[in-house]
Length: 134
Ligand SMILES: [Fe+2]
Ligand SMILES: [Fe+2]
Image (cartoon, rainbow, N blue to C red):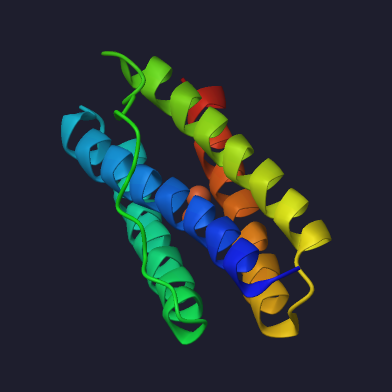
């Protein structure tokens, strides 16, 4: 895989993390109940750490982090629909990172992506637990 393609994939991941960060920061303020709100806020901070790790990999390889995210979908107006949307967003991240880990031949990048993938699986579990408790 050439460097340009690697940067393109890292930017795909970076944009996914921007969207997660912004959706979760916003939803954490909207959610009326304390526990799901706190969990969503804490996970938003994880997603911003992921942005930082990916931006570091992009810049080290001569690229620039992309800010070209899509229009944000916050998952509607209820706590349940927001949590369900957040589960869907995590599943999207999990599938993306698995695909990228299979494609990218760069040990440093793959190491970081595997670490992020583990965190996304934990995030999905945290959101699912909050839905089950409703
Ligand atoms: Fe993430
Ligand atoms: Fe996540």
